[in-house]
Image 1 (cartoon, rainbow, N blue to C red):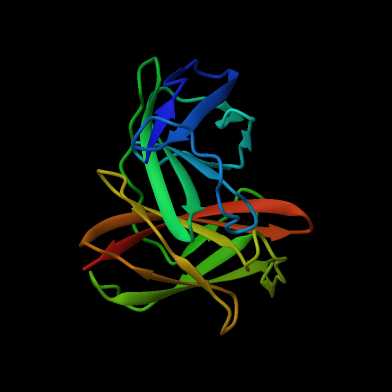
Image 2: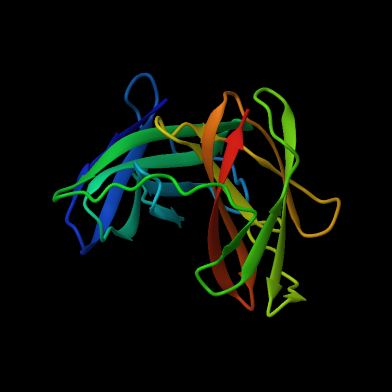
Length: 217
C-alpha cells in the first residue's frame, strides 16, 4: 500500500483541507480499515525539525478519500504520517508536505526529564538508559502546582505517544502499558541517536500535548 496525497503544498497561516487516499498495489482505494485506538485513521503532521506537531483524526469519504482541516503557521518541509491498522496489522505510510516561505529551522532541544504541556501541566519522564534494539519503558507523571493529576482515558489508553527519529523522521510504534503509576509505554528504539517524543493526554476533557527529546545509546 501507499499514500496518494492530493494536497502536497499548503499555504502558510491558512486553514486548508488536507486530502489523501490509501491505495493498494493496483492503485485502488483501500476502505476497510480496522479500528485502532478508537479510530480508523490517525494523521500525524510534523515539521522536519520536529518543532511542530499535530495529531488529527480525518474523515473518510465514500470513494476512500480522507480529509482533515489543518493549519500550518511556519514555512518549511513537513512530513505527514497516515497511521492505521489493516487486516489486524499496524501500518504507517508517509508523504511530504510543503509550506512556502523562509523556514526558521531549529536544533532539537537537549534532553530534559521535565516539560510543560501546552495547557500548563508539569510532566516528568522517568525512563532508564535506553539502548538500541532493547525494549524500554517510558513512564510519564503529570502534576499541577506540585500535586498529582488524574488523567482521563484518551484513545482507549492513559495517553497517546508518537516517537519520531531526528533526521529521517522514522516513525516508531509504541505500546501503552497498564501497570505502574502515571502513563506508561513500551518502545524499542531501532538505532542510536535522538528521538522526539510527543505525549498527548486528557484532563477535564481537554487534550494536552508535551514533547521530550530522548537520546538512545
